[in-house]
Length: 265
Image (cartoon, rainbow, N blue to C red; front, side, top):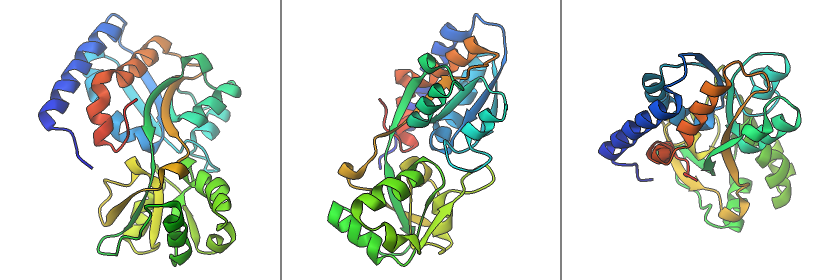
């Protein structure tokens, strides 16, 4: 995967800083509380400081999965009354939070598209996943596999594996991995040799040491994941939160999005 030229990236951040001054500089400085899942965190951590410098706002960040049964999952946090101004997570999860009244559905902003990918331990042979049948054969041949406890893992275990007719065959050799903040990326489990192959969204795989990125699973099997941001229903800083979302959705954010392994809209 080609990364953007650092000089172009720096110019993009500079333009983003100027945009932030335009969209947020008039407002008084505020603490903006953000809940964010792992898939977009690389982009957020890259661009967040530029937003803070340009706008004067301060980002207060809590991490958690987009979905799943972890108490750290963003839906669970909101449901038990934890406060936030902005959530950034899987787009489908954002829609579900809107239906539940936990975020303002009309405030949703799509930020990037995402693919599910696969890794093996560094030095291991790269299995063929270039076609649906090759991918299915790789699943059956693997001695062990791991996937996340959030959006990509839920899709694999509840939708894709049954669709491919391999759910029963892989169930006994599968491991569901709890993600950050208390857990770790799936790739870390593979790097230690605790799973032969691992699946997660590409942005959560490509920067982990000790693994080889095999590639994205076949296009016809991709669920069409995206990342999105939205204001929570009880946001205390809606103007500053909206400014952050516009900042992250600006065209100049594209280099950071590409660098993180995501696809700009």
